[in-house]
Length: 272
Image 1 (cartoon, rainbow, N blue to C red):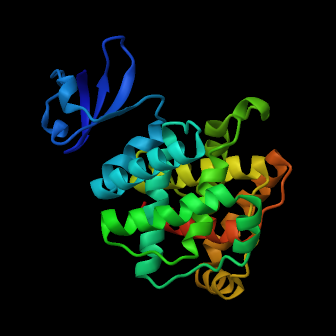
Image 2 (image 1 turned 135 degrees about the vertical axis):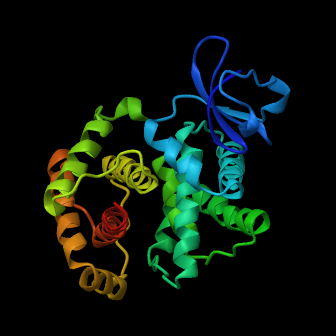
């Protein structure tokens, strides 16, 4: 396994013996230099078919969060007897970091449809609750029980059989949404930044959920109004992005989805 470039101390972008690009995980492998050969015995995990936007996320997230996400995906895969795509662990890691940030800021999103999820997706809810225990054991972060709902929705979304869904160019959709933001604020967004990687990943996740029709309409009206009033420009931009997505996917978009987009857009434009 030859190194292309390092991502962090324990993650490297490599090329395998067949010339395929791969993300390799292993303790200390990030200290190998470009073109060095990493012994296979040093590599604990490999991911293929990784999107460009994922590299920024892997570089910025704490290793413990990435390892926790990988462990959870393996656990859920075993319990549900399904194979998740490699990107699932990366998007889950970003999801976990975002959930921890919300907890630290005392932002708690209600999940009034938890009972509906228990009835419709009992297996996903069971592993989501188990995942909360895993997160606490591996990171020391105790997330509220209501986060089980968002975790379950993450697992549900990743079970989509894309072969049965109409094929969409998500990269093109992401770029067009980015153009909407740039035009709205008259700025140029750095596509290589961590915040853009996080935004692009969230958008990809949102598109897949809209295709599946698995949105949750929660009653976070107070938080929604607070965010809307605190970031009016980002809110108006989010409405335009949602309008574009609704037209492309023939789907209505809930206030909770708008709320998340406002947060991502505001983070994106405030760190240009």
